[in-house]
Image 1: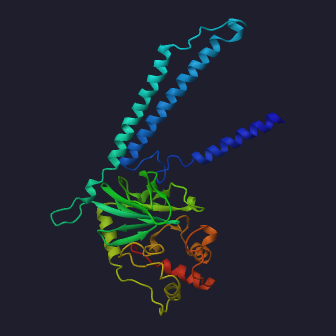
Image 2: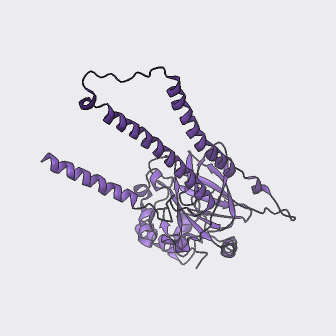
Image 3: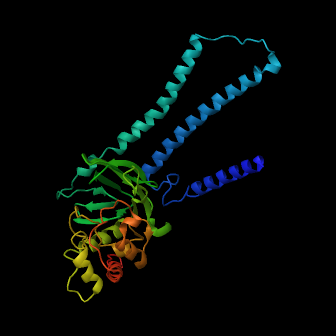
Length: 355
């Protein structure tokens, strides 16, 4: 009976491991398939660290097994006393120097890469007309969503970061409430977002996201920040430079867009009366709104960062956001009827700059 239980325990363990490992190698979220030079360099450091740890485990295991076999009682007898090496200067030097060498082998490339990724001097470079030559994105982490502002372009969006490929993109990271951490597993990171200070670094994206699952890379919050930390996702859409410029122009063209409380569209009217004070529907402007900018809501692939992007889920989210993201700041705001919530959801699906 016990043998059968042990076999089932082993089978259950292997099944759980299979589930966890099934995501390994997925381009949209795995660190093992980097889509940029930063991610590749970080993967190389990870592999180096793994190799060093494996070497240590193998050497120690071999020494242990040799000692186990050589000095087993059946071979050397009951009263055998191995040679005592306490106080051996040679051995003490060996087990002190070798770990130091291994740590240096790991520390040098790690520190080199750390300072390299923190070099953001190019962020402030300008051309002869005084315009910044590098793309900079101001990232603000909030409970439990992300705001992305493009200060030079004068646009802002939420939950979906859009960037060009094959060039460095610089980030200013800050948190609006508690500490979070900005991480795009397939591309690089992670970097804390603090309330007190701005952290800066850069990433480079060398693969367009169109061919990936959902057409985006996945971004995560990598710092435990509250009850809905695991649901604090964002998406990254990578485009070639020409397509990115087209997207920027489309966002800028929404300047002045708003919802009309007297609209004949029931959803737009309900949105204007209940939601407009917190949510903008124009992608042109500055960051700092209480709620996510919804100018591109119809272009997203998820509701609230993780729910299927359709009218039904949007309606359920509007009706009871606390059920889906406990602790979110939308909870307790204006209440709407189920009919109004569905109308608002249908209206939100029409907000698009890509269609």
